[in-house]
Structure formats: C-alpha cells, structure tokens
Image (cartoon, one colour):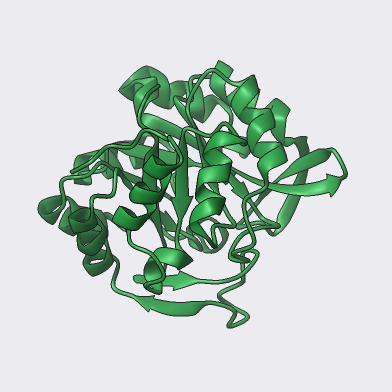
Length: 258
C-alpha cells in the first residue's frame, strides 16, 4: 500500500492565514486570523508534512490574483511539494504559479465555469500538476451537490459526477472539501469521500472536519482517501504532523517518515 499523505492547509485572506466554520465569510467577519502563511509553512515543513496546500479563499469571489509572492517565499525555504489554488482562471495563471515554485495548481470555480481549463492545463503541464478541488454539500440523504464561489453558490451539479468528469478531462488529483464538516472538527464526511474515492482512478484528498486523530485515520480507512488535509488542528497547536503520523502508523496506515 502506498504511504498516505498528511497535508496541512493554509486558507489565506489578504495575505494572512485564517480559519472559519462551514466556509465562513471574510466580509461578514467570520474568519479568525491565524498568522503569516510562510512562517506556518516552515513550521509544517519542519514537522514532516508531506505537502502544503495554499488556498486564497477570496480570490474567486473578489477577483484577486493568487499570491505569487507567498509561494515564491515559501518555495525558497521549504522542501515539501506545494499546491496553490484560488483565482486561477487561465493556463497563464497556472504557469505563473508553477514558475513561482508551486508543484501543483488547484482549480475549483474556474473549472466548473470552464471545464476545458482542466484539459488545457493537463495538456500543457501534465495531469500530475492539475488538481480539481470540489466543494460539496449534502442536499439529500444520499446526494451531494457542487458549490462554487467559496461555498456560496450551488451549481446543481452532482459531486460524484463532476469528479468523474474532472478526471476524464485530465485532473490528476481531487481535493474533496465537505462544506458541512468544514471547521466543525466533528469528523470528515465519510460517505461522500468513499463514494468519490471508489469512483475515480486518481488520488483523493479528504478535507473538512478533522478534530481528532481518529477522524484522520477513519477517513483514510473507511473513506478510502489517499491523503488527509487539515487546518485548525494544526494551526492552533492541538496536534503536530508527527503526532498524526504516529497515530496513523499505530492504526496500520503506512506513512512517510522524515
């Protein structure tokens, strides 16, 4: 079995790392300031994080470009792979992020509005560089829809069908964000994670809901995810990356040691 990845996530608003609950809105004052993104990235690099994800959480809704400077400074000081998302609307935007030092680019709202962007990016840079991030909300007992614009707007699209379409178009990885579980620390949405993980032929990164070490193990075992992404439990010092990996290993889940 391949080693499962532990990935801290930095949600960035106006150059600072923030956290909210269920995609809290910056304009409504629902985000808590956590700190400087580069300093946090260095901390997690030193703890042995397998990757780092940066999301500019208001870039899509407010029309701002992604944070090239943050990625450049982080890439200069960290050795883990970097993924960046938010405000990436064109192949040129992808190129700018990759040239700044990112290893992957993540697209969400822009992929929904222009699915050809997935294909164009995969053709230009390779599928391994293209991540499609899906913000999913449960709308019925066994149905999840795709939301965009930071979780503000429903597309009416089925989340599983969209994941399959994204992979057909060339996405090399899916990041699945549960809007319902985001920031609640009550556990991941295991049902939709397993549904998508068993449907697509690429790695699935589970996001939204991590509150305990068992939550992270459960989504890898029961949810069949390939990687686990978390924010609050790392940012507020509840657990280190090393502690997560120790627990996963104790549950028989293979992890990469530094």
